[in-house]
Length: 442
Image (tube, rainbow, N blue to C red; front, side, top):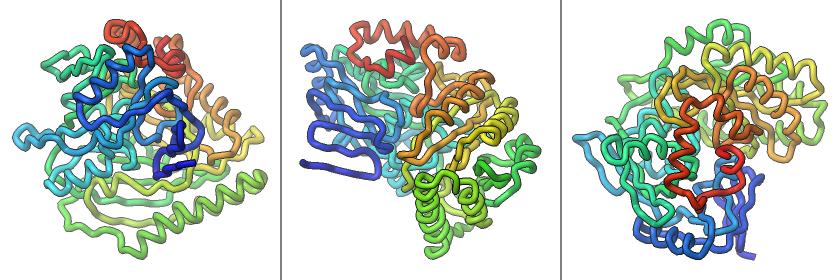
């Protein structure tokens, strides 16, 4: 059997499996278009044949948002930079381009995104469509950095969208879940390349939570990881620097990013899955393993880190003022339960934005993400955490595991009905539907 495995999805003959291995799709046929025209023709042909259509990215979503038994569109050939407009400060890129390639090509041109998440394996369209974000006091998600896009709709029309052209569609399609059509290309607002100074520092949980608002206010990009069963955290503060660049040395970078963050952590997770009672002690080891370090490097290299330990994840966006209370409730729940959690909890922030289905829509946001090592039981933990997050009006990340449905989501997104109405207009025949969209959109 032919199999292709990457740092992202796995393809076997007749089947596609996501990075975490928890979602599999068996499409009736697949296609890898190399242009907008080829993509539009493939969508029109599938719709005429009565097939549903979904486009996959790199497989880093934990939900079945891209799964289909109809036509599965692969990103392999729809790649590359299409145009650079230095005067406007924009770069147009094909939808299947990975963030790694985009950042490399931007850097070669002396350009940069303002903010991004912590991995570079995703495709640009997959990252935008599911609301991928990093952490930032002033700079928001990748979707908020999109200034134009081309959307192939259910009848095979290639629809250009921006604030000036089909603005209603543009507003929603910047984070469209694949429900409105298939994105062919995206235009991002970019800026001249810049350096970030990263300060990574262990810190006690009590101090981090007490100073959370101050740490967010004083740093352009602040995040922290809390290790359950301990009072240990690792904090990361990223701020722009005039330089000079002072990247981690090759040996020290390998020790921190590969040996400790991936190698040692993989061993800790494997041991914890085999012997759950050992998890609290292993968590204390993991919490002490990372040491303080400071370095200065190109922004995209500081924003991102290698992620080789595979896991499943749930993340909720909360009103920022509710985050520390929710984290305290999460910690109390873990302490009084029999759960053994070997993966750290990640906390990030984002400013308010105006994208209808953005987790940051209309409010200053803090994200709380919970993870479990792949293969370890996660449902009890995620379910208990979800009850805490929803009690605070939380919005689940669209590409990560959650149990919410359209009824709940309509109550936490003021423009939810507007999005659904647009979907009814653009895809009345539900060419782009699947079970996940049926649950979350109705």
